[in-house]
Length: 153
Image (cartoon, rainbow, N blue to C red; front, side, top):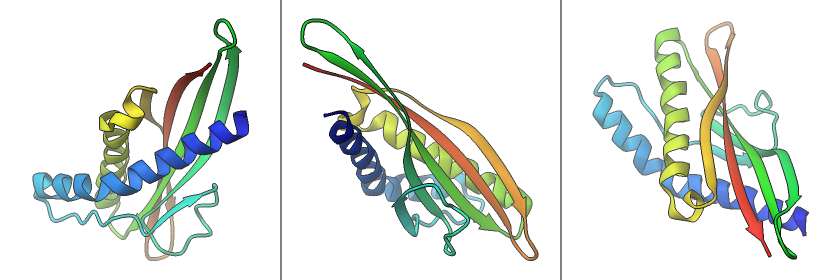
């Protein structure tokens, strides 16, 4: 039961973000007015190996933590932490910083706004950002933790 519920939550978050984020990215790019491109993610995947992906930007989802507790007669509560890992690259460190934070904010906004996740979502927050220098380009990785709490009778 928990593995099925966990899978359903993970796929729901992935599918919701994939459906809603292109419009939010387009709006953010227009509002910023600074010519920093925010293309849609090239890969919406499951797993955690960001470096293995050659085309950026990408977003990968994985189950970080699950807590299960009894919550009354024949009911169980499930507290899920899903991590959405975003990776993007750029040659300019300032643009890269703006891009990774805009992508992270767009994901957080989708989760907080979407009615299918909002009732269960306690929070969606950026929990980590890391930068890696390369020869010609730099890579940034942001981790957004999405906490979802549901009760199943």
